[in-house]
Length: 291
Image 1 (cartoon, rainbow, N blue to C red):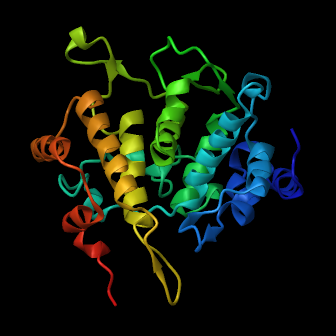
Image 2 (image 1 turned 120 degrees about the vertical axis):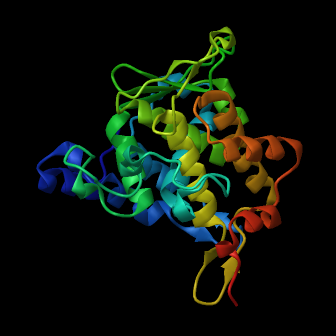
């Protein structure tokens, strides 16, 4: 693994590895938007920067180099696509203030002395990426298709990805990385109330599932438009809006035990129809362009 100069500078002068701003080491090459492609440009120089701060188990990806690239591009998505908290911290346009305050230090800064590090910055992407790097010491690929998982977090801060991870769209994969990084805070699942389901759940939105839902909501609110002084770009089209919203709805319905009643009703409605940009604008009118 090659350590780039900017990261070496940060390590030497930070005095503490856990307080390194890893985001600063990758920001220049990993946040470039292509107006021609209407999205982030996934670049080799960004992948190289990412590998300088996140150890990839090269041997595990040896026979599937395209999945290694896909993994790095998913991590770049965490860095590049802007995140903004939804108004009143709503979920799918309803249920204001549903996210417990404990989850927000992942995104918006410390609320207590134990809520990560001030050195991790104030931008949501910056804090989220720095947290991810701090709790992941290696990423490997497991080709075993008999394991009914997309990813899992293992002792030793090891993140293991399975074939199912790569069947999802890139934004859902990014949300799964946020989910797994929440396990790095020693936050685990518990048995669902209905034990016959044979799966684990979270009591509320403070756990790994809630972290991935909050990421998805913040992604939709922060990257609905990308704009400069003269242009607005529709980065997230109907396909991605629908995929991200359906990811949220499935995650909440299947893995959160205590769901506000109005959110349950919203999820039932979402199950029945495709969700478009126009539909999402009806939930969050503040996103309408002011020309």
